[in-house]
Each structure stands twice: as C-alpha cells, then as structure tokens.
Image (tube, rainbow, N blue to C red):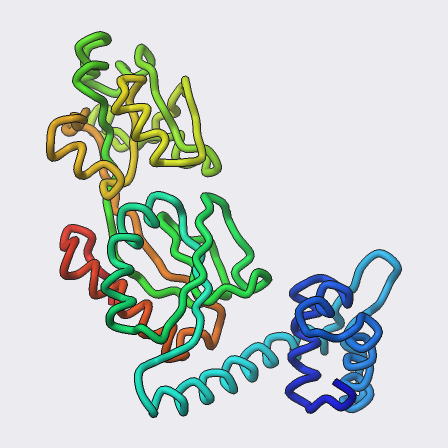
Length: 307
C-alpha cells in the first residue's frame, strides 16, 4: 500500500494502539513495520499533532492520540456499518462474526441454537472462541463477547440477553454418604466445589438469622470450568453452586438435588452480549444478538430477556 487514505491511516493508528506496537499491527495490515510507522507519521503530520510518544520499550498515547482513538473507532465502525447495510439491502445480512463465550453458555445455550441461526442466516459465518477467562474484546477484534454474571465498568456496548439463577446442589449419592446441610453453618462440614477466577463465586449468599450474608466457602476442589464442576457433583464428589442453565437437566431428572432452598438467596445472574462501540449497528451482529434474545424468550422463559 504505497498511498493510504485518511480512513486507512486512522485504521492503522487504531490497530497500532490496540495491538501494542508497529510490528503487531503490521502482521494484520499486510504492511511492513516501517510502512505502519510511516502511515502514523503521515497522519500526525497532516493533523499537526503528536499522537504517540515512541520509546524503546513501549508506545504511549498523547491526549490527542486518546481523542483520535475514541473518535477513530467510531468512524471505522460507522464506515463498516454503512457498507454492511448497503450490502444487506440486496438480501439477508452476510459476513463473518467473531464471538467469544464461556464454556457453560456455549455448551448449554449457544451450540443447540446455532443450527437454526445458520438456517436462517446462511450467509453469516461464525468464528467462535470458547474460554472461561476475561478477554480483550477490542484488542482481539471480537464482534460479540457473551458474559454470564455482573459486569465491570466498561466502554463496551452491552445488550442483555436474559437472566438465570444460581442453584446449590449435590447428588443423592453424596447426600446419602455425608448427609444434607440444613443451614449455612452446616457447609463447613461438607465438601464444596467452587468456580475459580472470580472471588465472589467462593462466597455463597445465605440467610443467617434473617439477614443475607455472604458465606465464605472452604473449597475442597476448585475449577475454572462450570461443566467440569457439574460432572464432579454428578459423580458424588461434593456440593456445587452453579448457574441454573448448567444443571437444569440434572435437577429435573433427580440426578442432582437442590439444597438450602429456604436460606439460599438465589440472585439473578445477567447474561449479556458485549460489543465494541459501533459494532452493534452492523446488520450481521444485530441479527445474531437479536436471535439470541429471541431464543432466550421462546426456549428458556425462566431466563428473562432484558430490553
């Protein structure tokens, strides 16, 4: 690319910042690191301001660079959204959507719904990454990240897909061997299995003397995968507290029994689609998120969709 347009230069600048350097941005743009650096320099010369402070160790944005990054993302998203809408006018939405989702939602909600989505939108391709970790939605160039649980403050656009609840449960085999806890204090005598990665999940909200109290759980086994914990509970290893959609089937057929139902405070768990600013307007992304909301409303009414 010997000559770059203004939008090209802004796109290159945004990728440099998001990827943390010229070399990483070059891999994605098809330019050499030198070509990327020259494009940013041309942009700085044209604007008459410094956007990046270059050091031997890292790049730092100036105040002008931070402003251009925010506005540049909006500009690039608007360009792509406009192009996508023009193309969609010729037919159904098309293109590729990059999605990140946790293992439990992927297995129990997303995967079963995808055949219908593909039948409805055959020209939308999906690249799905499944991971029980926090990801950099913008840095990894994702279109949608689906999260279960409370959200931290974020510049991302959020769309509520629905809500679930958490359930404390164990298998009949475990309860036959160790007995059933009747109150919060009984849990210290039991084997508890908890989800790692989020400290709040090792504190179970229970009513003690009529007051809701987060009870710190002494963990015997912890794991970063909710499905693996569910399998451990089914095998009689211990007591779990998991999202209802993970263990609904096991509760329905008696393979797991809900516990402490009189004192457990089963707060709602939001299920949310997060998108970089501007991406929510792309027809293919809008179709995908609308579909997930629809699926929650029709297939899982207990998981109440948000507005």
